[in-house]
Length: 87
Image (cartoon, rainbow, N blue to C red):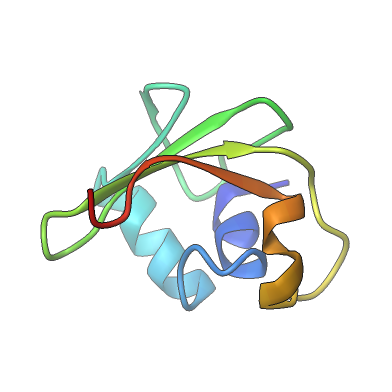
């Protein structure tokens, strides 16, 4: 699944457009490499995001969701927080 779609579906970022901008601006990494909006993610990949306020967060992709958005209560099935988010 494309990272921009994955980030929106799992709630990492609020919109696909925001995800595209993060990737295009160099604020998203997959396995330590700069991501493009069309970059694919798969289970086992690590995503690192840098937010506008300077915070960074790292996640492990656990699974790829089906179409549509993932309910907040089920996001832990698709992502594991590895670090950041207020550390």
